[in-house]
Length: 465
Image (cartoon, rainbow, N blue to C red):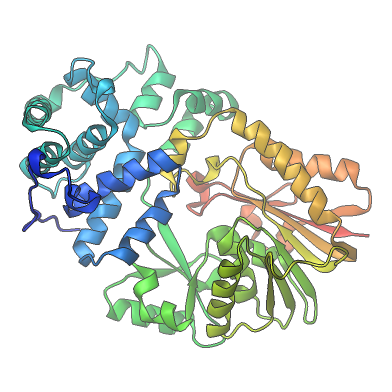
């Protein structure tokens, strides 16, 4: 990504801001990044949803769009390291700054440390201009002074000693909460924990599935290349292309025409595990996961009958239109105005309950600062209940697929063991019969991002006697 300074950005002086909109106050890519981070902190919304809303609402050049994404995700990934440095150079006062100024300083320092193609002077200048608009000249001068002092002493920055406290060292330098570092070091060892955290700081990627009803992955790859978007086939799934996560897929012609869909890695593996036969009835029991509700019917290559769920009627209608536009006419979507029959049972039931989120920290870096240890315990309780509810919907001789984006034992293998202990009428069906053996363990799909470079996926397939 070639860096360029922002041009034409209107600077709004403090005395002029009372009647200015938030978007004018936070003008330009850097200001927009600060505004998105502020909203995420105030609402706990997912960053990806806030970015999607921003790009639908406002026109941005390809460069500015990429810059906003990079600044938002980058400053979140490296937040602990950035804060360590800023706290040291701000003489302990950084923690007292208002959130918007914190975000602005993190973004500026991220550019200085991690984006060498952006001139450090540009990063400092833009940060000072933004702080001037947000607060006042005095604050802008103080922020500029701190950042310039860091620039002068950048080779002398000191981190916690690895020999004295390796867990604190890893927490700061690889930017993860200390409780998380301690947990992973104790469970997996320091070397593996370091690999896990290093991988979590990778930039995200996307997988695009070519609609087999209309095109092929080869044709889609040619189109992407012609439009300056590189891609490569996903291992074991030749009809799936991996592309740079900064691309605006929703604006591309093949996506709008229904020739492809953005599918999470877990969607692709779950579709393989489900193995619905022609004429089967399939229930995708993931009401809070719009992507898997959309993807499983889309990915299917057999004429099965699918039932999925939407929380709102308008959401159901939007998904139905999207599926029909892609040529998928064998899916019914349950919603408040179209509820599921109370006694309905199915040949295949897929359940992906909400989990802690620890398996997707590279794609959702904001979650590492929101998740608490207790979320794993609470999550496992919810997962067991969701699996029980799903099991009641499986016909005799039918299939139940449990899936989640986690590698934590409480959310994966422990759930499977507990379910089998309490359901003698279900047997575990070896996952290696449906997915490559290299991603399977103890009869289940068990993928960890730092090992396979594929989003964390856990999936177990049960057959009812």
